[in-house]
Length: 318
Image (cartoon, rainbow, N blue to C red; front, side, top):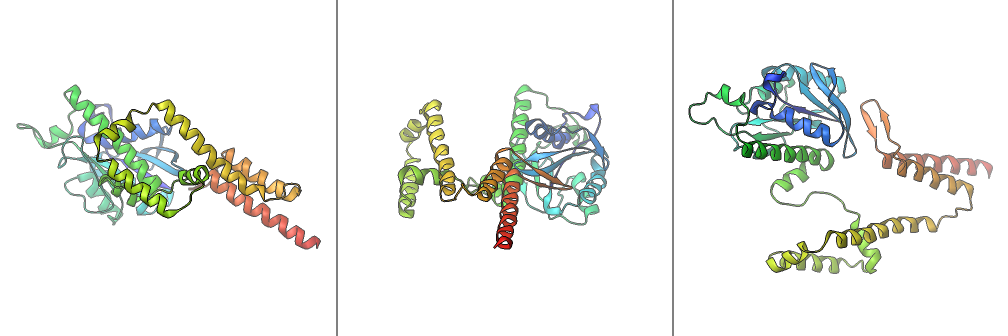
């Protein structure tokens, strides 16, 4: 389970101010992943749901910014979460407006809300996503600056785009881990295992590592040539969609081929396969307190248990 905390101040007068960046990013996550933030628990407005197969709690502390740690500590104890599974989203005056920065751990810097969290939690080894709000303009007091709203349409759009990107960063962190999000900030590839290679091998019949390596090198070199990039970008969406249908179809067929060697005339094997398909395709998730077992994992567990059960009965019959 992950606890995603967006820092801000409660009340209408503080809505959409610079200091309420955390609240606004959580609203984006709430809408995107259909996780209503309606419950009141541990001095916070919370919503529980799933992001990329992981159970998630979205929390907006209602203690006011400087006492955010009180709510965070209670949430951590209530859900029995580890610090590594706490993600905090907040504003940063040291970053230009709309700029994002991720850190897997570290000090609070100049942010009072983060200072209170680290002080009461007694640890600072938890990831955080910072959204830049910029330094005060000339003639502005710091307090007035962070509690002000964005005064131009251009700036509002810049910040809204930043909220969308911050929400994506949080989802990436939950789904793919710290390594992927750090790599993405530096323009690298995420640490994600893709099934498309199975489809490519099935279509071409070529599983040579050398072929894949040489093709990858060619693609990297060609990406530096604008005409080639323009050509790829000009391919109609319908064509790409057709290729994807074929590709993912081959992936599905490759999976079905594994079942071909199984004697489905045996009712025991048939029952095992049926149980796995129903759980996996039917989306059967198991919620065991703070732990959520995804449909794929449930299908795997059910398949193993049913198979073990039938094998034991077969052995007893013999």
